[in-house]
Length: 121
Length: 285
Image (cartoon, rainbow over all chains, first blue to last red; front, side):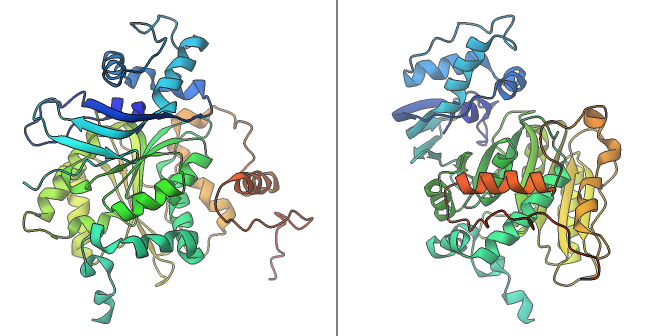
């Protein structure tokens, strides 16, 4: 699972208030090269929750040169976009677990695929 | 009715029906692959993504990732959800570019508001009308699905669902819940007079209204019609020039596509280029 997907996801558990961001526990991580597309990253900028991303990066213990906040010239700042591209699209969680911040429901990630099925109501 | 029993929804729940054996078919059965390809292309046409912009797209019922491959080919970034672990396993083996997720559409779309620029779904929606478990109430599942889908889409974004409605009543039920969720749009039926080529699409627009795209009919040539849909209301693109991409189905376009296919993993049988590549047949054929 890519961090972009994680950043966009919100828990859909019954009783979750917002359910965002899902907590991540990561036991295996991988990096895979993806063609850089600055236009796409710049387009996604307004939709990305940067604070949540910083939090996730901390949770999985990823080393990154991302600044503490989005720079003012973010959409044209190539170094920033490249680093963001790396964190969002190239880093992948292979094994681990997601947890709903409101209800504590756990969703396992196996072979890079999170299982978001809810327990039957 | 013998036709009824052929519907896979009547056989078993989706996560059971699409087992390892069934999933395997989607990598080796060329006819199935061809159908998936055509349906995906039509869905992509219907959601009318800006042509020169990379978009973020959701593929519901992504299966083995055949549809996602087409999205990636046009430069879009996609996320695929499916309920069948076997299908997802095949997708993962095929090393598709998109991110995968095991998810039941009846539980609601688990994404933040305004996430996606477009949504496609090939042959998945009819499964939502089933009650496979004691706790399943189709009406509730439909309502939950469409309301969460609506919020997960960017304003003005479109969704296209190709599906096989079982009865007119079922089609009505699905459309009603989509409209209740706030969507504009409706059903587009391609080739309505043909039993074999007939294809049903639910086309939804989140937020801004607009006319439905025109269905394809028997008289259409494939070349001209495909581009015609939606163009009148395509405000974003009206003043923009096409990028470097070759125009649809031109010789250059075909060659670019062949080139991409040659590079891709998987056993695509790509024909060699010749002077006949992309040449039009004479009308008398």
